[in-house]
Image (tube, rainbow, N blue to C red; front, side, top):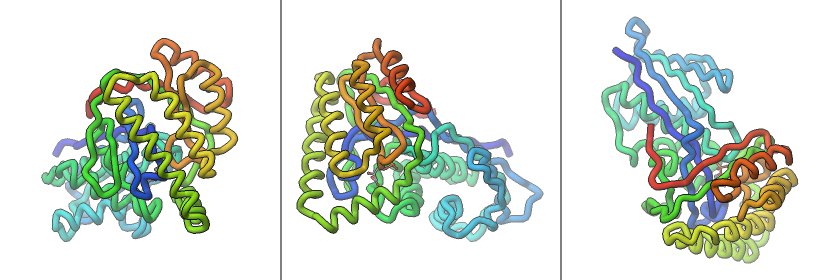
Length: 319
Ligand code: PMV
């Protein structure tokens, strides 16, 4: 049997992170420059049920039954098995490669889950719909923090810009006028679960204040949706910078992220903000297409570990 492969892109949240966990809207885009790719090969002579996993990017080489039952791959493969009603998986080898930085707010966990679910179910002869793939990945997202909004698995599965509200069908965004983003890695890792838990503690301590911040973020997100869909993308930058200020008030920025946001604005970006859970990971800057390399260079000068330039058009293709 030939090897089966599948891939999934990274993602960036443009507006609404954290508030989206509390029912507010958010906007996210796929990042096809970074990808998770999974290859499944049959092991015809292997013992049924013996799944071998190789993930060199996280230095993992193991048989599935040696992984903790709560390991994301164990949870995912178990979810697939249950969904398909298969008592035991056949023997196969799963090779996972990813160019998406880990714990950096770019959706690495969701992309690995989605690519794995697609490759394994295709290998088993039961390719699943995007809806089911996204749901399987969502179950794994719950391991990273108990209350994921579902935005990561959704944008990574459907690989198109989305307007998203927790628990509701997403809306595919029409991009009226393509725009350019520079994405810069602050170099420090950030665990989504910890930051989300800290926001929860703040919310428990001062519900009125935090709810008001979420409402202000929601208002910005609604305006951003209109701008994106109605060709006035010059206003998008200002909205991003305002969203960043609110995330600072929510205590989820960091000195490195603030420095990068400032550097991007100084270099001519029309707006900038952290992206994802914050406290580390990546930030994004909106630029004119012809000044993107200048802004990227300024971000590297200001300490960014690496930068990506992404043109957001409609819709991005899936590999
Ligand atoms: O996985 P990250 O770091 O991109 O964070 C996801 C965005 C949050 O809003 C912070 C969490 C969530 O579940 O939506």
